[in-house]
Image (cartoon, rainbow over all chains, first blue to last red; front, top):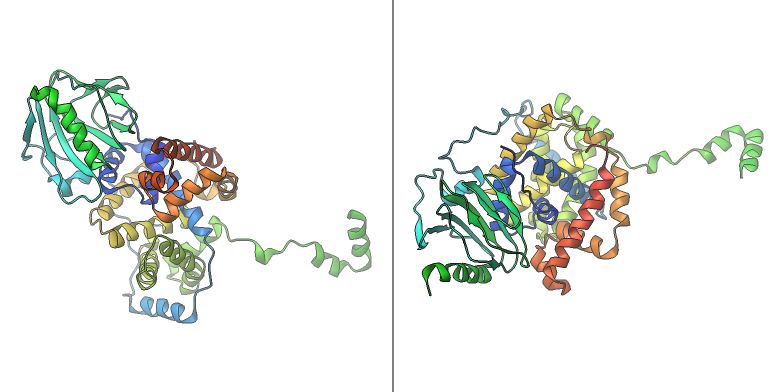
Length: 221
Length: 211
């Protein structure tokens, strides 16, 4: 199914520039794996990078540098250049398989995830070892209404399973919510199956604040 | 002007030709030129073509990496690695999908994220995305990049309003995040993002036609 909510242009541009904080880049990759339309836009962003790289002011390479390069070619085995690997076709959704971009942080299998309950109806797993941001999986019971909240900094969320609705629309598997600090929303998860999503932010302290503010009413204090 | 040229032509046709001929040697090689060099590298393992690519792109890649804050010895190493990748994977280069400049930009950026920012998961993810794209470009009916006017994109970059141009350069050439840019320029985060959005829309418009 084609996603209907996409990456913001500003996010895509930074992704291409290698300037997106790690946690956000992981979530953006998760969406890109599922969204051909955003991959086409990413190629446009890469073209901009290609032109800017070419416009750099330069000195000609030195004779030493050229000789070093040629020596490296000499050391290469005399073989045909690599042929194209088999094309990767977007896989039929195996409900148990986590997207490739998330596997380094959370493993391969949805079933094997070790959820931690943080509030009634809300479970979470935080990735460790992410610098300058926060990356987590959330599993929210069907039919839950989260309190109205906004975020500090940038926040990216991709739905892996289930769905939710808020003022911005209906978000199902593959859809990305690309929000900045000013957006206020109140997601309501759809009935049926739990809503599993991956969320990242570049402002860890404020995000913790958001989690706290979100969960306080659920916890009843 | 016209008259004097004609006058010269009548008197000394040979010299007149030299005067009016465009300076061919100054014309920058275009995507088509690099695509031809790449075919020679791929099909004949042609070193002269490879070194033409090296002479043009290696100093630019080196400057790109140095601007990102990569120390000189490592930048030199990464440039060599990028060009070796080109030598090894020349067969994978598809001019219908990306110009050589775009392709090398991706290779250098990926090396930077992998080896300088030390994000070990970035490369396999990019290879996966690349293979998905490859499967699609066969089905898609888009204009080959070599036919897209690169000069139009260059001009569009030059025409960006000052603030947008600065933000785009801070992204691509300094690898600064939205929040870092906001802090450094004392701009609200929302304004940074909306300026980048506007810049991207303009630049995409210049690549137009294909979509």
